[in-house]
Image 1 (cartoon, rainbow, N blue to C red):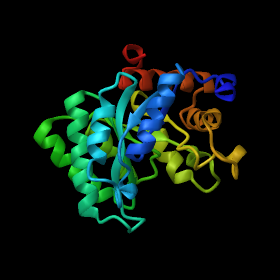
Image 2: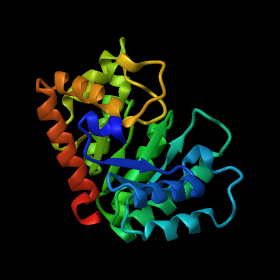
Image 3: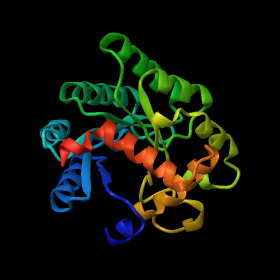
Amino acid sequence: MVRARQAGLSQILAVGTTHLDSQACLERARREPMVVAAVGLHPTHLAGLPEDAFGQVEALALDARVVAIGETGMDNYWKEVPLEVQEASLLRHLELSRRLNKPVILHCRDAGDRLMTILRDNCDRHGTLRGILHSFCGTADEAKQALELGLHLSFSGMITQKGNQPLLDIASSIRRDRLLVETDSPYLAPRPQRGKRNEPAFVVHTCAALAECHGLSLREMAQITTNNARRLLGLESAI
């Protein structure tokens, strides 16, 4: 927490990937005023979970310190969990998100077409989504579809890496009221810290890269992304 505060961070969203670490995220949020939590079952972590894992997530989600549902989504890179199982879990998370009016955090890796089809069908049935397509690394078309569905796009340290100009070009085209930054800790440390375990303080480097591609100062982009996160996550009323 000390390094995060020194870097200028005001709040941190700790995101769960199983029923157990969702509980840990909530416990951390209860101890640390700077932290809020998201609870969910990551699509690559669904194998071997107890039958009541989602029920435990549902119970955790009722807590006021939980401001988002997820991480959920689709992953066709790792093959341990069938896509049909991932889809069923995703739909349960989307329903919980709508029922509790808490935004959903979405993972997507090598599954953009299928994820967008599922989300579009869900929107057709139930209306615009509130949520985040996190650590975005997809195509310009996927970014366009995500925005049309009502989602925010969150960028991680990948946009600081050499050779990622196509992703920076996409980031520069995203409307500013839908931009977010993240660490995806402990992974994807930004270029100045590459090789280290990622941590919240490092998000400053990602924010700086996003600011540069939008022609803004770091301070301006930090204010934009902070305001976007607070508005989307309802942080003022959650803490």
